[in-house]
Length: 132
Image (tube, rainbow, N blue to C red; front, side, top):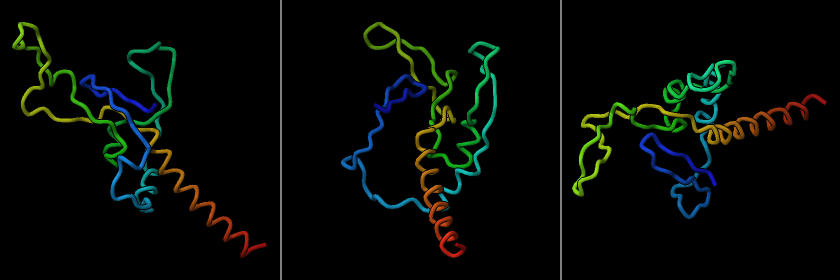
């Protein structure tokens, strides 16, 4: 199943069934075309093998271009450890904490690219019919 864990450790399931959706309509071209403004990057991770490198996107760049394509979360320093009512400890979000881009929803970018490719195919088919 499509799942992701947010910065607070909560597991979310992403579903595709229409039973959880309202106001279903086709994607507007300017939304799908906007995915072409994303900037692919090459990088090395600070936590993986330093000899490895990766391709991807920056969550911050994605959030600027289309916030719906980013995962959002609170940085670790937005939490404090306090005592709970049962004598244990709990992690509590500090007041005035701000959500920040924390990841990229790559699977949703594919949906937008599908719309772009379909329109390019239509344009190509029309061109072929006009220029046999």
